[in-house]
Length: 132
Image (tube, rainbow, N blue to C red; front, side):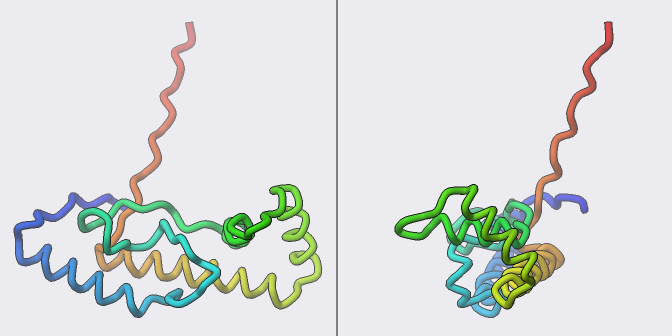
């Protein structure tokens, strides 16, 4: 996907798209989910221009890890990984809640990209080292 150039903030087109993005924020697929406190892959009304440069949406296990790390007494990364593997093997309800949460976040990310609210800058390709 091509990264569009930011719109000129002085234009009517920019103001309309900005208002549309702010209005959309209240009706996202993940609005109100307390287990997603920091979403860096969606439009943030208080940050930057349109389209806003954001990160790719995290996978389900990454979302669960981020949520666990914000506990008052957070477990270690190894404990979180072990717990995720147990949930995955058991295929319990909590596991599928995280899978659904990640899918909704990914879908919302794609919706916002298609509407021009956000973009993801392509990764820089590694330069080939000259063989001498």
